[in-house]
Structure formats: C-alpha cells, structure tokens
Length: 258
Image 1 (cartoon, rainbow, N blue to C red):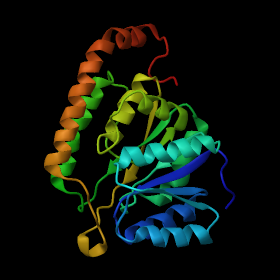
Image 2 (cartoon, one colour):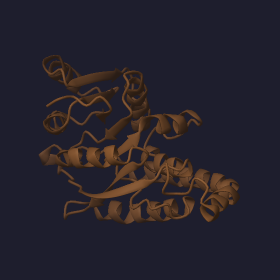
Image 3 (cartoon, helix red, strand yellow):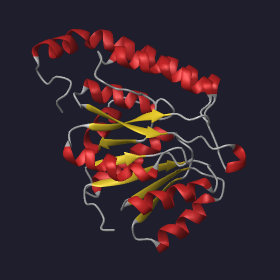
Image 4 (tube, helix red, strand yellow):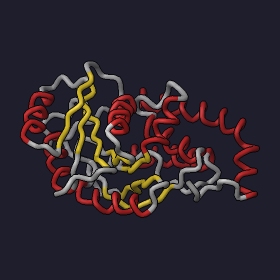
C-alpha cells in the first residue's frame, strides 16, 4: 500500500493492553501511514509497539513520558504530523471500538472536501452501555445549541478526520481539550471557525473485559468534566452569538463553508 502524503491515521493510546496491537494491525491493513502516540502507558504495550514500528515502515510510534490525556496526545501527534507535511489526520481510539475497515471511506470523503471535518455517526449494537448511549444525547443537545445547529450528529465519537492546521489553531488558543473533553470541544470550536461537518455512519464495538475491553471512562469524573466544558462553551457562545447569528443570516463564511 503506497503511503499517503497528506492523510495519516493517528491513534492515541493509554493502557489498553494487547487490544492496541489488534487496533494498529487493523489500521495498517487499511491505511499507510499509521502513527501511534502512547500517553504515558505503563502496561508494557510500548515495548510491543516499538517492535511493531521497527518492523513496519508504515508505522510510527511517538511516546509521551507521562499520562496527559487523550487531547494532549492527539495534539502532540498533530504537531509532529504538521511538521512532516501532513494536512489531515484520522483519529481513532486504541481500545477496539472503532471500525478500521471504514478508514478508506472516511479518507476519501476528506480528500473530496478538504476543508471539512469528517465525523463518525455511531451505530450502536447490544454491547453499548445504556447509560453512555443516553448520556451522549445530552452532550449532543448542548453541542447543537452551541453551534447554532451546524450539523454535528454526534459530539463524542472519536473516529474522525480533522484538518490539522485548523485543529491545532483552536487547541493552541486555550488550555482545555486535553482530556475527555477533547472530542466534543474540538468539533464545537471547529464549527465556530467555519469548518463544515460531514457525518458518516460507523459502528461502535464495546468489548467485554474477557475480550480485552478496557475503558478509562469514569461516570462521575468525566461527566463533571463535560458539564464544566459545556458551561465554558455556553459562556463563550453567548459572547459569540451576535457574530455567529450575523454570519448565519448574511452568508458570510457560513456553516457549510470551510
């Protein structure tokens, strides 16, 4: 498979055990190149990933010395990717939830509209925890309000293609978006920037513990983080509302145009 000079797969990883190897192999089967950012992992997978990268020129490993959060790991990878000349990154989780088989379709959608962000719309099966399915509806409702209905179908699903320069730009302007708040705040701020969302359906796979499933989501801690995030975004949204409304009504850099 010839490597892409513009689009890469970026996988942040933290203590997911051997599942990360399956995720990386799946991504490499469908795309070249694939980069993995280990976020201070202490489960022994860094050594295995080093061996995989040494044997595969299409795989690159970036290592962070301590755990900083998903957003921080993604930002580290984005900055390195930009320096290497890449323009877009497809992010996917290392825990086996995201469908590697759909990487080519998401990348094609991105190359056909390079100014857009390509967002996965999750298709849940019986393995999905009911609390998480219901809880994301709340976050999606707030996201729809904060973006004046920009067209974001799901604010939390991390299987996405981002334009690198635009995402680095919004992350550098504030200290948030470094942990579980990354996925939602990224799409809100990119929509404010005028980046158009394109939504594509994608299945979600929740592995049971006996299948190697690992989740770092904590209902209390992370829901509090999301609540604080939406409070911040709403406060900023109120300040932006006159400009966002004028932009929508006049068609000046409207939603739908990068």
